[in-house]
Image 1 (cartoon, rainbow, N blue to C red):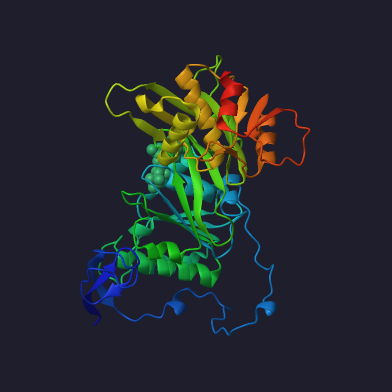
Image 2 (cartoon, protein in one colour):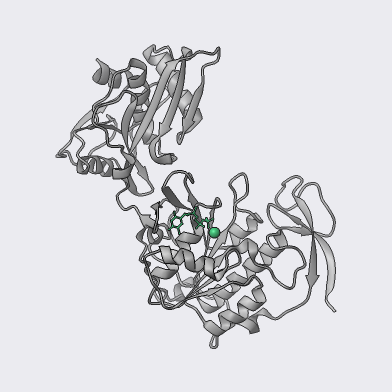
Length: 455
Ligand code: TYD
Ligand code: MG
């Protein structure tokens, strides 16, 4: 008979101990141990899933002897996902996608499964019934005759199905619903997630089949389950965006096969997720008249130049302490900009409420957006609109100097392509080429910029 006993697991790193400990000796986290019942039984996994011809007895090998180039990436029809993964799907890779409930994780992966028409795909769901998935598939305008559905949560049964079907791609919705018969604790608990993810990863590596795992996230936005899960998989993607906005952003936070700089943008529509290949057009609102407090920044998201609208509202503070509120832009940086405007330009920001917003529900971390934020704030403060054909790029330094940004040429070209007439950049940016079809104004200090804009 199998032995059953209680083990304590660290919620943060997945380390285990025989008794409860206040501070995890492995990761140093306090109060992270929880009790779970474990059912111990020795099983030989390798015999269950191994395809024939796989040699597992490996020896150390010199790096120069390793033969490269046999691993071809699998191209995906979904260009956004393909770019975020680093240019296609690597065989045998395990990708974890996290995101809030209702953001569209199941839709994204079902859509990908249906687009994958040349391959056999197994979509394993522990969350929805076959008819629910079918209903969702009906809304998506793609068809794949080799897409199989399997509503099962036991990894032992899934293992058998995988062996029989031998799919080219597997989607698991979600890892928190899977359970291993060897462990007594409930699905979604640390030991279950660790065990079932381990099973799926072992399958991926042994058979060279790529697997997508959907993961739930906790209240504070991190992936549920042990941090270990993120260490175990090859790629971690985050699907984010406001549920009430139609735009969704796919970002990678870990990628063993590519950079983590790239993002993918989607629009949630009636018929599934639409790729947004030219995001600048949707992020700049169409307006007829120039409005005060609205400016356009030439920023970068990953390697892609992106023109984006920054909005500010400055109004006299009614209460004693002025309010500062920022959406999509770092609140600390906003305070810094306000202090610089007060000190260097003599604007009385201390008596004003200031609200800053980045259009489209995006979060921008590129410091090159500073100049546009400054222009929006002063434009609203002075109630003077800025021409909608002007855009800005530059980072603000503490003494009011405007600093150079990366990839300036790409940003200028994008602004030119979208029909902007003038771009303000830092004087310290070296431009290798000067014959742009857009007027470039170089500024070195914040007061110089305000002089140009507001006289
Ligand atoms: P879903 O993929 O179920 O989210 P998750 O798996 O992340 O919880 O997506 C849910 C939302 O997407 C749902 O609120 C409805 C919306 N949706 C559309 O707007 N159009 C569609 O074609 C589909 C399939 C879903
Ligand atoms: Mg779902």
